[in-house]
Image 1 (cartoon, rainbow, N blue to C red):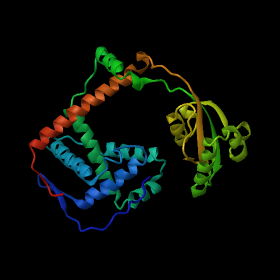
Image 2: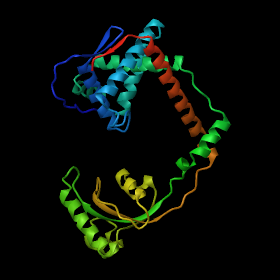
Image 3: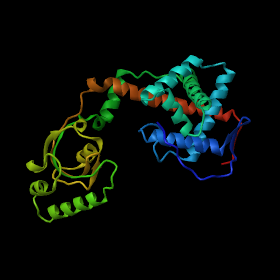
Image 4: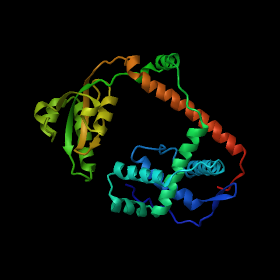
Length: 299
């Protein structure tokens, strides 16, 4: 689930005091390590946002919210924590033994991890109680659609061909990348892509000049689709690494697609408007309780 993240040994120290409750540098770094592993799974903060300072600020907010929950006698039942832990195991395909091993690999204990999950659930509950949800009107949703129409374009398809140089799973791809760059240079100098594919490609489409026909994003592996759909018609990619090896991709045609009808995306739009409004109110509410708290930052 998570791999341990090495960090330089430092002398621990207090980096923040929140109403008399301290946050240690080691706690910030432990949380940063955990969030870095979560980010690798495409969730949570972006890498640019994952800094010690940002993580510390979030930990300050969490302390403020859990303190507020204590004052208002808002609690989380043990059974709710149990359910959340079970969901984490299921989502990551772990049994009890491997789940415990994953927790220990982060240098923490199940007790501390359970406390962490309970705090997260508590923060969610407080925000649900204190921050009102917004239900957008049909007019607001339609206005959002009209002003963001470019974001609601159909998936479309591309017609492409490629040259593949195979690389063993987990193997060094340096030589394969160099070969792809040499092949690309020859094509740019006038060689025919299809003939080069027949000569050099190690993929099953080689006899067809590397032709793949039309495909959508979901038809091919992620790295390949990301590169192919980013190309203009007639353009070639640089070396693209996938689980099969290193590819040189050329897009021949791109399907022209229109905006998806409002009715198809109406609920998605309303959800996005609600999310944005909730986030604005959440920030405003946190600013209010921060203003009422004693916070000393020694970062």
